[in-house]
Length: 105
Image (cartoon, rainbow, N blue to C red; front, side, top):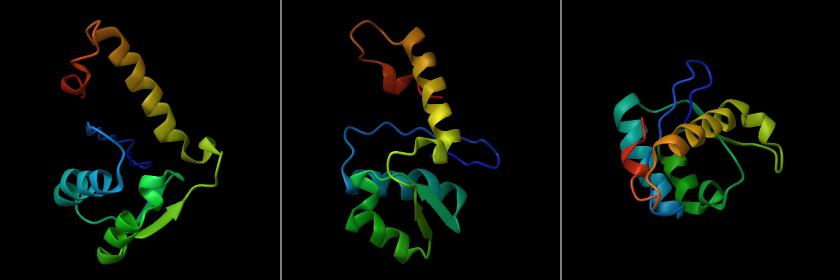
């Protein structure tokens, strides 16, 4: 999760990208800590387009905006933070890739 204004980024390790896991992580790690945002921008991932995530947004009265398909530039700040995080993890993760989730900032 990434705030374009402050550049604040929140990484949450998840075992998969299922809609219920994404919705749960969003509510627990973002909404419960920072409050309910007015608007969120999501990509076209099936986890964000799912009925579960859409219902969570509707229930919390969040205006959910989707990016255009195949246009990662629209969500450029988040894409850049993902690249920076991948570079960071590449230097510190063990050779079996077992500890990446413990290294998230």
